[in-house]
Length: 521
Image 1 (cartoon, one colour):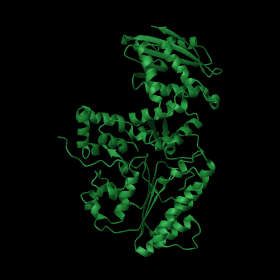
Image 2 (spheres, rainbow, N blue to C red; image 1 turned 90 degrees about the vertical axis):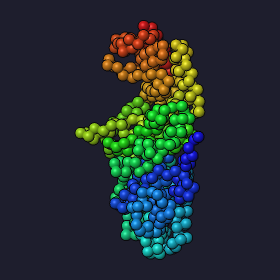
Image 3 (cartoon, helix red, strand yellow; image 1 turned 180 degrees about the vertical axis):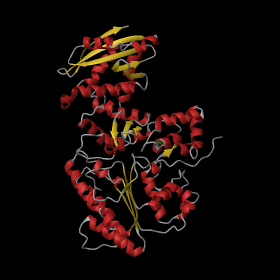
Image 4 (cartoon, helix red, strand yellow; image 1 turned 45 degrees about the vertical axis):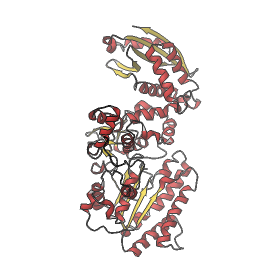
């Protein structure tokens, strides 16, 4: 008989309702207590659906003195006073900011609600002055210093990353609004602002130098998300049920969870973090899936990559310094900081001597989901929602050895290449090949490098090894000759499989594959 367990809190971001309704809570309150007892002003960036809102809600409940809701949790033994503080909670995640004036409405609505409780003065003419007035009066009325919690502070900035005018307007508004945190320092007990990204050098925080950014602080790397210890303790009974349903051993279930959802590193030399949304959905439904991606990938990522014609293979294997990871500027030509902070890349290694971070996809869910999401934006024949269908047919044709069929399909992937890419058409082709090869690698074996050189694309199936070389405005024969001259087939000769060499040429004039030649070894 299946063990009866607490329900898992999928999509529940309110700590009070979670506790009252007896959902499972993975206890983060010891870290929370350390945070609030060792500092005052904090900033934390984490990817979407990573538990930021629940952390904010937990802090709110704590500062409202609701001790009974923390029964059995770590903080129950740590806190002795349970003082009640006025809490000003602002959630910017509930609106869309493409239209001018939306941010003003959100801030005004929050201020009106607070002013109903703590009063208002006619002389407070703008958002910043009104916010300062609310903080001051809350302190005077309650006799306790104020707690300020801001959830998804950066959503207005992210949603307008391609609209410089609106970005400038929002930045100016938020800069003045958040300035109250500095001017009203004596009235503030604690403040935490969370978001996906950090807008750096031209930040809304450029004057707010008292914020302690803990986004890459090793002491708090696991304050959101699920770490390995939590998965092996509080969540172990759920993993056992998952294993039983999927006909796996418990060890196999853990290995699959790790492959799919682990691997987020928010600083060097710390353990990996699991995406909590995907893990909880997997354990609740007892089925592995790409749950994080089903909630939607932000379009601003694609816009950034296409705007700068960024090389996707470089993106997935980039090396950068800490300044790059910590700085986002809407005018920057480097999309890596946004992609990293949004959770699509993570830290895979660190060179202490040169202070260089090596980046990569955190796990299989992110790699597969991100590339499937990108495919329709790079390949015109693939409409959104049918990427699986086209990849499936391509893989089937590759497996069956039907070279003409899969080369024809490959040509269809390059058809109608957008004319705005004419200045960097070669990079566009490389991006399409990278996406296709990586996605095919989910079902076959994809290789990129050998001791003799870099192969454009290699796909290995049960019976065949296809070795591709692509030229740009040259000839297919030259491409084939490069494969042979560099002995690209050598590593595969011992496999006993049919070796197929394919040289192809891209034509700038035709904007597609002009011709190809095939040779069997």
